[in-house]
Image (cartoon, rainbow, N blue to C red; front, side, top):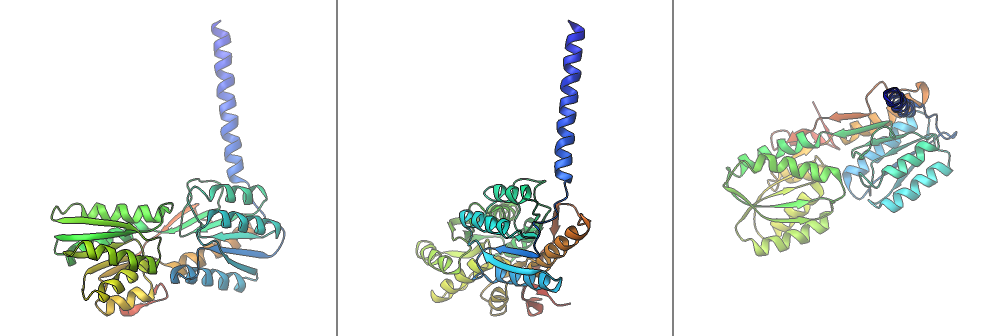
Length: 321
């Protein structure tokens, strides 16, 4: 009886070991591409300067490396993104470079590409699974948002009412930035959040949401915004109301730079959009040629805090030396 149990136990251990080895083998599987020379660049809408910059830099880098480029947008729709992945698979794409439409919703699309021998290189936004995308290169949103929040607290003199403009609920970056903001701000008991609105990263929506917030909160002193698009929209609404508040964002756009220099915004955290887009494409090229990127799947790139002191050096998500 004991021997039977021991044998069963050993069999289970061997099965578990075999399963683990299979998983490791699957993760180590080299994807060689669909057979064409096409590199798909899939991002959110180019109406946002951040996404436009990253898409254009990725496309330019891919063309310089000799690829045919198809640059398309999923408009933050997981359904549309799924269709674009299917098109890339049908086109036998060499690789897919993607700023994705949802941490959970994107997993199935990346798996389909993986199963069709097409490697996916994610940048800017992560997904909630590892081992199916070759890389996930993201700006350090936590570090950047905390840095911007520290500037905000100082500008607010550690007290006063403020509002928050949140990005898209399904976006991990929106949650990460908000969490980092509050880890800093919530340490100050005299700072009170009186309103929070979701504005979907959109400038026009942020403008209208800010109008409503101002009407119901006459003593508002500041605004924390999940991205620059919303921060710029908020700044416009605040200016139209004849007020000046402390405002921070995240991205490092030229529009935010101009608002900071004009005194309408306080700070932003510059994400190196151009750099991470270029990195994704170059790593894709290296992987297709050698079977490895030479880097871990998850890669974090630090943000740079932009204030009036260095805003003049900012252009197209790059800070001049």
